[in-house]
Amino acid sequence: MAGAPHLFDRALAATRAARRRGPEPNILTRTIAEELVERVAFVNRRFERVLLIAAEPEAIAGRLKEGGQVKEVEMRLPSSGDRLGLPQEQFDAVFSVLDLQTFNDVPGALIQMRHALKPDGLLLVCLFAGDTLTELRQSWLAAEVAISGGVTPRVAPMIDVRELGALLQRAGLALPVADLDRTMVRYSDAVALIHEIRELGLSNNLVGRSRVPVSRRLMGAAINHYQQNFADPDDRVRATIEIAWLTGWAPHESQQQPLKPGSAKARLADALKVDEKKLR
Image (cartoon, rainbow, N blue to C red; front, side, top):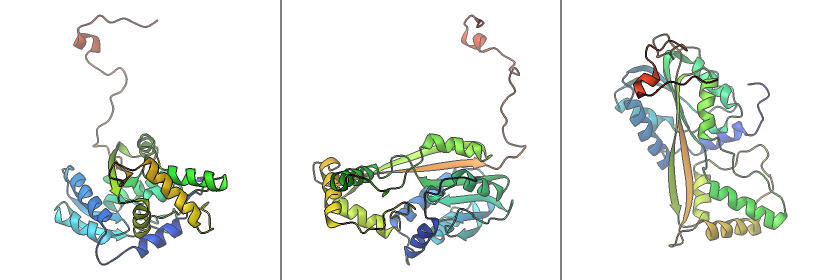
């Protein structure tokens, strides 16, 4: 949508996503692929043509086909901008994997994906959300305040799952559902976490990020804060990962519709066996 704040460098995010593609999918891609297949299995339908947007789409597409509900998968890498350039009403389903969180215009991206669906087509999206990497965010903030007296954007803001449900409705999708998978991952130390973030191509891609290299003093302060505040008794540190799953359908007349006000044929008071009292 016009006027959306420009927070993310989509071109940088796409470059890093392409750079992390290796001969074998990483553990994050494998985990998401299994969850996606399980969620599709709950839908009693066969999808002839599916669009898949993901950083490592081949492995995910393979698992989808193995599930037996998906016939043809068109694969796309994350775009370098907010414009997806999708054809109109061409797909029975659109699956977007861990990409939506870096869009500057999230409602606009959802609208573009909805337009690419045939009537009654399925949209299934997963993205980092909620309190993902809250421990790392707090540690960077504390370290920068202690060292320089100010802060710079280092960990991307995350959308609350309650807001995501509203965004699905705003995008014109029917039967919207948003839920959250929360996982606590443990690492030997904060350095191991930071290295994995870089290896997955998920490092800071905020437009307002500092271009000054992180000093050893600042890095040390962030690591110390992390260790002191988010370590378990065995000295391993924990990191929160929350992945939101969004489901919606392109509108179609066959879908369930809410009843019109006053159309009920029985009173709630009768069902509850209580006296009805009219409000003044």
